[in-house]
Length: 121
Image (cartoon, rainbow, N blue to C red; front, side, top):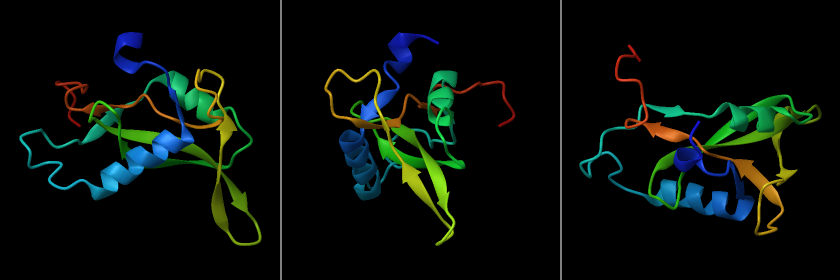
């Protein structure tokens, strides 16, 4: 996949938290002339990194990145057998230049415009 489209798949947890907060507070996401987001294009590298952990499941959080695009951020989870709750597991970033530490995995792109126009989905 083109690095121009996706860039790095690791973002600092602190930035991911801001994106998620922006998404929660945003109003009119689908009424501002943009098409409704109905899916996400996710690079294989994102999935491999999140799955390369001692986890039981993956959780996807919604957010808005710095380009204003709706994105999904992925976090591995581990089942807490005492509570039955899947707890988020954060891994230290390998590609971050900022040294912020723990990461969530991004690089998804909204569909449209990154969708398959011939897909029945």
